[in-house]
Structures are given as structure tokens and as C-alpha cells.
Length: 242
Image 1 (cartoon, rainbow, N blue to C red):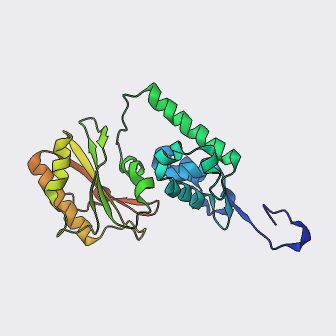
Image 2: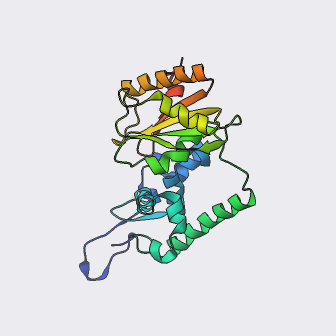
Image 3: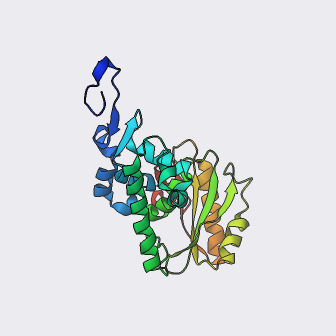
């Protein structure tokens, strides 16, 4: 059986997982309607375009696999339709829809090239990096550097490896900020386990970074911990921020 229709010859039933087969709170369309397009991940937006998954894999997992295969949106944008259709679950129709959506985004950027992403909430910060950092197998610490209007100047990677006070040199974070003449920054790191719950070490590091920022007159606006399509804002939880 495929998509609920019986196959001839009594073959083993096979099901393609549709959006409706997912738990309601996990459905990307419903999530977007509830929280808005800026608060959902890149994988969820791509899943809305794809609409359906493949046997044994729902559409969100398919979207995540595509982003991983092509190294996030820039790689996906560079891929040809022929390359996209080599991925299991992506036929010509899905490939064309992906390319069309990405081309709309490209044309928007060329229409207003002076526009830079602007961070107005923890969700904005998390979504800027979520698709790149959700499934890394090592911890990466990155900064979102911003100007006085909270427009993004860059998102450099500062450390790769276990995030702890014995490894991190706080000055390295501020050296990157000063180099870009940033007025403020947000710290972001991932938890390879997928659970974004902050550890005591995360809180301790955050407290040190915030204290250093106050001395150097560079605002540390937040520390975002990224898991598997989830995130936690330490600022929202009052952890490490006085």
C-alpha cells in the first residue's frame, strides 16, 4: 500500500508519511500559524515546501536530511535540479518547488541588497543559526555580531569543542567583536545531544562574558543554546544575566 492505496500482487504495505501523520504540535504548518514564520526553523520552512516525506521518514526529517546533505541553504541554492533529485524522496516536482522558493529569496536580496538581518528576539537569533548548528556532532560556539541597530554584521565561529571555563578565553569573543566594530553580540552554542537545557557550566561562562562586556562597553544581549530544532535563551530564563 502506498499513500493508502493497495498494491497489486499482495506486496508488503508501504506508507509515505504525510504532514497529517505527524503529531499536531510537530507539524510545521501548524507551528508557523501559531508562532509566526520568523520563529520556526529553516528545516520546518523547507518541510512546508516539501509537504510529504518518504516511507519511514516524515517530511521534517527529509528536510533536515536535505539541509545536511547540501550543507545548509547556500549549498541547497547551488545544487542543480538533477543533484536534488538524486536525494531519496525528492522527485522533479519537489526539486522545482525548492529551486523556485530559493530563487524568490535570492531576488528579494538583490532587490534590497543593503538590508541586513536584524535581531529583535531570541527566536530571530536562534533561527539565524539553527539549521547550521542543530545537528553538529561537536559543540560550536559562535557569535552574532550586531551594530547599534541590532543588524547582523557577522556570525563567526570562535570555538569548536567542549564549552567550559578552562577552554574558553573570554578575550577571544571580544576580540572578534572589536574587529568588526560591533556594538553588541549574542553568544550561541549547540548541544550535540539535542537537548538545549543549559548546564551549570553554560551559566558560569555566560556570567563571565556578561561581566567582561560591561567593562568593555559591549552589550552581551543573550546566550542561546541550540538543540535539535529547539533552543533556550539564557537571558529569558535569567541565567547568567543580572
